[in-house]
Amino acid sequence: MTASIFIGGGGVDYTDPQDLSLGYANRHGLIAGATGTGKTVTLQILAEGFSNAGVPVFLSDVKGDLSGLAKPGTPDHKLHGPFTERATKIGFSDYTYHACPVTFWDLFGEQGHPVRTTVSEMGPLLLASLLELSEAQEGILNIAFRLADEEGMPLLDLKDLQALLVWIGENAKSLSLRYGNVSTASIGAIQRRLLVLENQGGAGLFGEPALELTDLMRTDENGKGRINLLAADKLMNSPGLYATFLLWLLSELFEELPEVGDPDKPKLVFFFDEAHLLFDDAPKALVDKVEQVARLIRSKGVGIYFITQNPADVPEDILGQLGNRFQHALRAFTAKDRKQLRMAAETYRENPRFSTEEAIREVGVGEAVTSMLLKKGIPGVVERTLIRPPSSQLGPITKAERAAFMAASDMAGKYDETLDRKSAFEMLKTRADKAATEAAVAEEKAEEADTPMLREFNAARRYSGKGVTRSTSRATRSSGGFGEAMTKMVVKELTGVTGRRMVRGILGGLFKGR
Image (cartoon, rainbow, N blue to C red; front, side):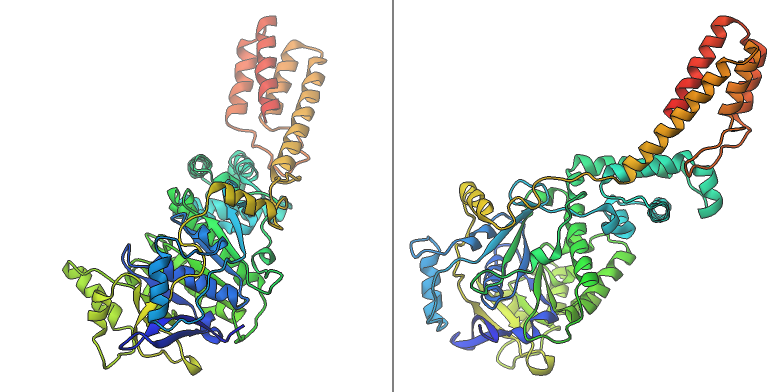
């Protein structure tokens, strides 16, 4: 195990070693550059380096080609030949081919072990962002979470939340007195957004068994850090779900991990690919949450590395916290592009040998402008660096190979079967069934009344809320409105046998439906 990760060769002839110090690797980082400039290889060699140093890694495979980390590279690969030449050029004398210990994960459970969390663990802020709710709708969601806590009803999956929202709609009037206006229109809007989420496959994210964070922070029998690879090629069709899940995972790490100060090496390194998806049109509260996590999570021993095309995709307050930089080529065809290029160059410590702005524009594929933190966290001088070649396979493995790795994984079987323990849905259903039974008993007693008119009057009176005591937490309905109107109609119009049977059918159905 070394105290640093070899990144590549710098200097005039590319023989000056450029290293990332493990002691400062939890100070976060940025991998940026236009499409096709080599970001994936940089991401791959960083993941290899951390794994070799015994540091677990979590990263998302957006394009589906990082699964090659699980297999060693080969000299006959069409790109590994040039890689051998590159290794010689930068003085990488001990370049060898080897695989990394990889665990495959997938929110949809197709290309990896299922990943789940509960609705309660996700929380109202992240869930509101995922559902793209308005401020009023987010307020209803917060009421739902508060009621779930007060009533002791676990919110585990989407059907729990949907059932609770129905209950809130039925009791909107009494809840409005306590929490402010509870609009049934807002409840309906949330329900529709939940339906969209289900159609996108997001329902599989919520449920049990929920992911245990310790399963992401493991090493293999040789002391190498496990690389947790999230299949994200299909997930990218729902960018909001992708970004929200990764932010939830960061938040959970922040909440659960203990303070470790400045460790010799990170406890976990987290790569956030396509980082712009996290910040595009994100509400300020969410951006503030990301900034808080990024600022404080390094004391928990977690390093975050954002991967994006342009540094401008990352808010300035967060960008200032990214001490280790790997900047691949940026294209500058418009005035806006040139301004962003100039701003990116200004964030580096200058090198007198060359212009940083020109270097960012001119570096070739596989080359990057780099700056890593030195002693006491001081940024190193910017350098043009030829990135070292990866030791694992460049490109994806086959479906059969992936299936074999999953079958041999120590996570096989742990998360495959879903659990459905008693939660809000079942508890509310029990209450509704009990209320329906009580209503049926009350109706039968009404059938035994002395006069037909009294039977109908009592049935309508019970429906209006008078004299009915519920054993559930629902508020008693008021005696006005539809109940009084129904009573008058019964007394006036329905005195015949057919009419009485019809009213009993209507009222009985309403009771049981509730």
